Amino acid sequence: MVICVPSTGAVCNSGDIAWVLAATALVMFMTPGLGFFYGGLVRRKNLVSTIVQTMVIFAVVSLAWAIWGYTLAFGPSSLDGFIGNFQYFGLNNVGGTANTVYSSTIPALLYFAFQLKFAAITPALIIGAFAGRIRLKPLLIFILAWVTFVYFPVAHWVWGDGGWLRALGVEDFAGGLVVHTTAGVSAVAAALVIGRGMDFGKESRPNNVPYVILGTAILWFGWFGFNAGSALSADDIAVNALVTTNLAAAASGVAWLLLDWTRKGKPSAVGMCVGFVCGLAAVTPASGYVSPGWSIVIGIVAGVGCNLVAGWRARTRLDDSLDVFACHGVGGMWGTVATGLFASAAINASGANGLIFGNAHFALLQIFAVAVVAVFAFVATYVILYVINYFSPLRTTAEEEKAGLDEVHFGEEAYYPAPE
Image (tube, rainbow, N blue to C red; front, side, top):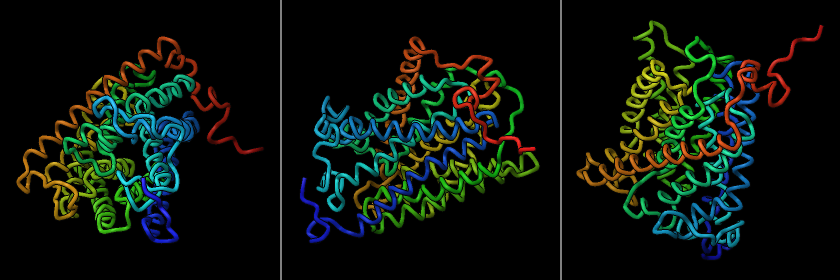
């Protein structure tokens, strides 16, 4: 740890501090954006509860991250790189000094705040898999257990000081493994444990398409902080990450739109928005390592691939209500593999070259990391939910599901009748 005194310019960089402060705020804004995105997709009777779930998850995980999460994820390694130690428990030794393991130009407390936003939005992604059919109390228990036993360890493996995947050379610029793979695969486990909704198989349309569009726009905007902020500096890597983020999202959304148009005869506004989010998820691990041109390729493959997986899922008996796996799981895994294919040390000197630049070992390493994280997240999530369900039943009753969780949990409605 070194003293970080912005006023002297000795260690800290005021430009880096300003950028990461802004990026932290941008990533926080993604949580209500996700709430509107999901809220617009669900039935009207679950709109309020869906948005509130994202916000309460943000609050609960913020507290967990401050007390024990940050130290487990970013404290020095214990158990052979599996988890961090308790050096930073309760934010002990985290303040206006810079932790040079992660960044020497911003205070450690700012790094804590930036990473908090990632920890908070990741479990919120999972709720799309069981929208409208989980009770609030076991949901909150699940969120605390999931971040403790899934997110915090994986974050340490990939990003933490001494994490075993990081030591092997695995690269994940902003969370393709840590955020999207864990959430997407966990969504499948959750859908299996909780079971299908009573309306599964019936036609269901989004209750508010403008909310979906608004949520997508907020997510896209916030994702610039998500990816470009992960450079932790106001430098050329941040610029590259911002540009690749935008191009991959655009390419994926357009690819999804064109595929729908070709197959169904009409483009879909909702489908296009989902495509944008798939592209954002896919470019996340690669954004600081690949060129803008390759980010377009990543986006196109994400748009087509995620679309096809979502179509396949709809023909199965798996009730992943909002296709969390097809979007975030497939997108995050593809982006992690794509990093192994297209990464260039010319873009980021601290990274490795990918397969197209002659480094087959790195490509295989990225595939290995995807497999390990996916299996771990699925098994751990399945066990966590199974245990919770034994003590506190997860599933709403048929009557509660029919009435909608807005009324059941909060006694409120999204839209009240106009007064006479």
